[in-house]
Image (cartoon, rainbow, N blue to C red; front, side, top):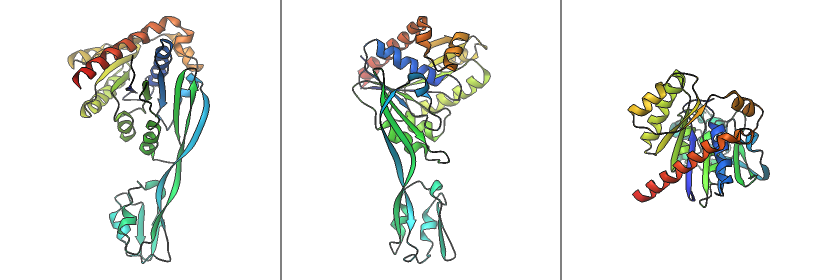
Length: 291
């Protein structure tokens, strides 16, 4: 059983079917009797709920601290602007301006203020919803439009991870800071790609990231058969395991475009995801043996 195991489902680029893999894997593993939790950390455009259709039982706002200047106390010394590396607070002559969207909530400006003129106030950056999709635990974050504090919201979503089950973290696409935050601290990474030149290019970037973070990983090739075999050649040359080759099947595309679970509409694909579950079980045993 994959208790106390956290896997991240990631991809070097968008549109590879990452959420399709994550949600169907969650459902198939849950159907085998394993306790499963799905966490949508693609907070800028979460869509796992479209497939799992959860019953939401709880929600909360997520806030961060941003500076608020007491202009009556402020002497316009400029020290707050000097310490801020993101220009979230600047002193122009006798005026202090704050730019909340640029603030990283480090608290440096408040600490260096010689007259204690800077306090903090909460800024809402998004929401987190939680509930159940059948027997699958469900958590999803949604960043407010216009906000850029993606890693901060992802960190809050990951606080919901339960250690008594298999937790599946649906990661944002790419290899930037939000991805780093989402995969950080997970036990294993499934990298989803497609057999195209763009898929291979971005897969190499994703592989470089997880190797830099010293995370064990394996590959899922989605839409297998639409392109060449360069992804397979790359994996063979780099000694990377491919755990699933999901063929390019129009029926899968039709199910996904209708918000339906692939394994419900096409039961023959359940065995594919059962194979991934068995692989992860073996991977966990190997990792436990090294600890």
